[in-house]
Length: 237
Length: 237
DNA sequence: TGCACAAAAATCGTATGCAATCTTTTTCGA
DNA sequence: TCGAAAAAGATTGCATACGATTTTTGTGCA
Image (cartoon, rainbow over all chains, first blue to last red; front, side, top):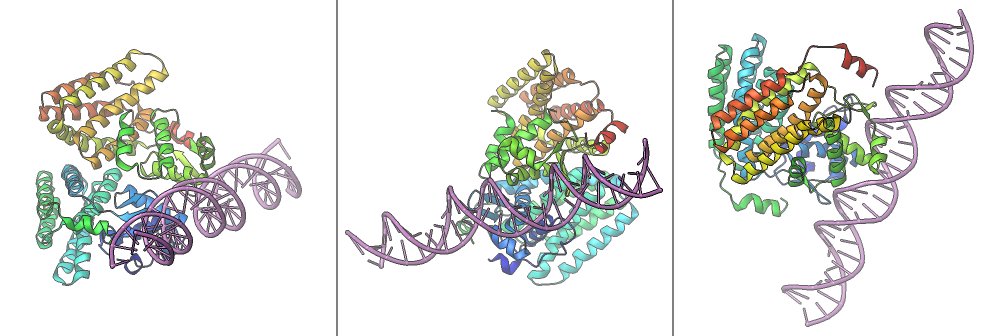
């Protein structure tokens, strides 16, 4: 896969830090699976794509490397991360630890305006599930992650919010690699249940529902080691 | 070799080593309070200090900015972070959420070799507490943080370990700014208790002790807003 | 043909230069 | 003397250049 074909042009980046805009654009592409795990992201190519020098492209790649979405090898370059089954387990172990707490915190701070935002988010999820085709499926995965990020923003802790951004992004990589059926519809109903519990401010219930939800997502993974990813990575595909 | 060395040489030694070495050195200085919050870290100064170009210095500062230890302002430069009371609360809220879980996980994986390492760590803490003077006090703060990092490494989750790296580092900044008495001796006895519970593999007890420990650290802070830090920051001092 | 080895190309790590922006100092008028 | 505007200086943002390292291509020999 060639990144030139996969990345859409940078969103309006004239105002703020350009490296950050490039990072966001690349992260979206990785989370949306338009950039497959193992894809090479050379500084020069990223730079010309976004019409900046290698200096700026390099800064963007460094940021993604910190988030664990990109792995860099000295004198070799940057590649979209190819998480091992062990890394996948750690991602979900981290989410099991953090997200129930975030859900509890969100329960105590949620406003009616937030509930409206949650409903809108659920509607969007539903729309993508109803549609068919790979594009809708990508959007659906992204929307599912956005639900968790919305919850994290409602919880009101900027540090935990950033941790969750990293974990959600890495989760979508993991699902891309090890996802089996896609329990999307099931996940959607679970999200709906969480919003309901949030509305009634039942923090215990919200926390429990979230834990089960994460367990369900992880249960859908097939984390047995297989030759596929290693081979693909070895072939730099 | 201390904990931070272990973490970063294991995690990403493949990257540009020089920028990382500079980051580690600066982070140690910040955590040790040799660099006060608000101190300006100019690219040129850092570069000449470590005998590298601004390019490398800049990369190191960018890393610290990701960890929240340094705040960068466009066209103005990088400064040692000056966490607000709200940020301080968020740091400790995050630790309350994460560390009991880490302690539980560590409980299930701890080996007798780990216990030996914990005992050595406790001894070192004790030595610095016995000594007097600002140097010993700095080392004591660092050793106290290293205890929590050692626990995180035993827990065996690289992602959570990195989160803890960040939280411990930011905590020491917070303590530098808002710490009152320094409950160090008290903290030391609590650490000892945690190791004891760890040795008997009582995960419930370990988790509870850790939660209380964090509460005690936070209770020692004086998070009332005061003119001091804001003024100092305004004066760029 | 197959393989080892060397040349060439591509890519990265880093230093340096220049323009833009911010900060400090100087100057000048009221 | 004080304050404001302008000049000088310092610092950052970014692009580019060059050596070092890796990857690919090409070539000769068995």
